[in-house]
Image (tube, rainbow, N blue to C red; front, side):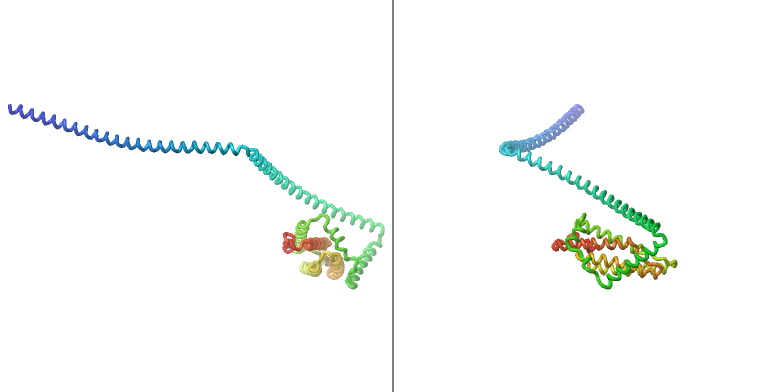
Length: 317
């Protein structure tokens, strides 16, 4: 009987313990559900607040859309003006593109024309040289034994005239009226182009001096030959530089003739040094330098308040 009582007690205690555990689990579940419920309520409240804010923004946007529609209706009368501005801008871009293309084409044509002019100049120089050689050959054939005597007489006459100019000075026949001189020089040139040509001529002069191509001499010994060439080169360039420092657009005729006379006399006296002489091509370069320098000087005198590229290139030259 006691045993049955104890067994019953244990069973009841076990059932009671099990019931307590289930109750605790349900309490924890209930607490968890309550927490989730509270969280859900909070989330719902937040969503409701966000929804209210979105409704407010939506209403604001609707109001702004209405205002914008009103403004568009008011500005629609200016649509033609906007279309015109767009058309003008488009045409402006087209014109700028056309101008750029035209500029590029013009530069290409200019370079092509310069090349053709240079080729023509070389052709004319060659033609002139051939004509001179042909005339000389004809003169040799006609004069026969008297040819050398005639050449010598012509040479002596040229030297005599140069000496006469040096002794008596240069008369008014070498002083050109300023306007006539400018008309002759300015033909085919602009101020900047003349300055560029002057720079190019001076570059050729410097290259000829550096390459020792100013003159020639018939000395066999190299040192004596180079010394004789250097002597006549120095004398000739000293004269040319002196005239150039005094050059003005109304005195270019005097100095051109003076340099030509110096060329004749230097080559004449250079005969004593195994025919040391200046090349005629170098004389032409320096005479071209005189003409271009006079032209640039004239442009400079006409534009005293606009130094610009013209004066800068004269200084750099």
